[in-house]
Length: 267
Image 1 (tube, rainbow, N blue to C red):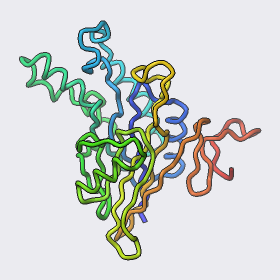
Image 2 (cartoon, rainbow, N blue to C red):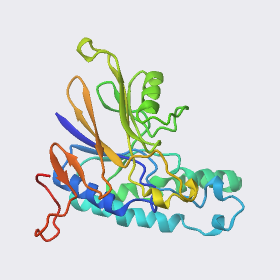
Image 3 (cartoon, rainbow, N blue to C red):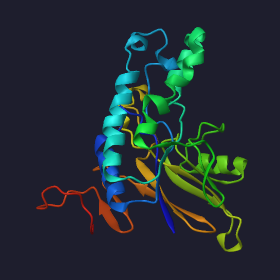
């Protein structure tokens, strides 16, 4: 049985540092067979259409935010985990090269130099640029979620809708929701499911939500147990204290008297 960890929507620099740190520590302890980040790793806010014509458009943050991702995400992960690591492109990740093509068409031939895989030095960190609809197991594919139209406010429903259209089980991010929706009797075969793996962003940093706004988002990540004939998805909720439970063990909780070490056993 292959074990795969799937994370999504960090949107650096608007990520939740505690949740990210605990998830990386968990990856180091658990040593999954494969690790995927399935989009919106970076927010890249400054070249977004929301900042067009504002002072923010001129603040030149793309390089700074790319370096932060290397320092706060890639270096810590690679210090504890040297296994296969794939990353999909999300709609936020593609902002720099989309901006160049739209605003400076005379330089559009250089747009690939602004691909996030180059900005973040995937090759240097041994990271695979993973295409959308990457087959991760029997009848199961990874996408970010922006590739197919249609959104639901109910967790798992967007992924299920995409799975129905794509005629394969879908694991996705994009919605910032955590949930699995299934259809079909498993004992007869032919079950279809969609899995939204949550996010690792700090919602308080999402200024576009407006003052006092509450989004229907759930912090978390996904685990896939991949067998020869099927894939079993598991949603992992990350609590307010940034801890979470996997296979009956709580991770991320500081054990009193243990010198602040990472919790590995019990609840």
